[in-house]
Length: 269
Image (cartoon, rainbow, N blue to C red; front, side, top):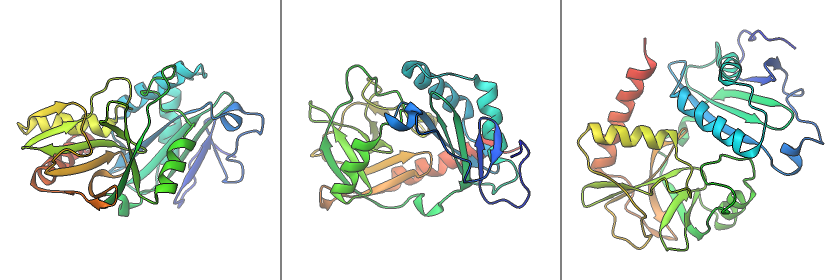
């Protein structure tokens, strides 16, 4: 084991600040992060070798860790783990950190570029987060999301609240273009406020687009429909509950191009 990145690696595993082999990248069988899903995680992305909006990811991770009562090692320690994992690898990576009651794990690997702008098949399902665990917490208990997606045989599930409006997706935030306006569900405690979601909202406002944060009915007339996340950026939804969905269009294309210009500004130099 070493705390120095290996040369010529394509992926890297870091456990508690130390570079380890895949075989050593494990948690103990007694770790409650494994046994009951008591863990917090973040998925980050690098552009041109730099972690995008690291500060926002750290703030969200710290909030999740504190809500779950997990040990928070501090932003400096987590940043060092992330940078160690990503150092010297491909310029565009997916970097995931997991914090459990007993350990910190970071995995960096080449980004699957097929996810970016991939047309998505989506199904809706009724679900709301438990009132005792805020939707802003990015916890590791993801079995309901995975089972829903697998059973529906789709790329994503869009959750619908008891009020009949879509809130978020199993792995993404939701955006729609309705009458020329960019509409996205509000940060009302039911959603995980995505880092990419925030960047897209900022970008849209810079473009002069009107952004409305409100619930969206799956039966509402939409001109364009998207899912956004760190790894997929802004992907068009082409099928919703087995029916054709509007997919992408000119507003989303303009927004995505401006978002990528924002990325260049923030990650270059």
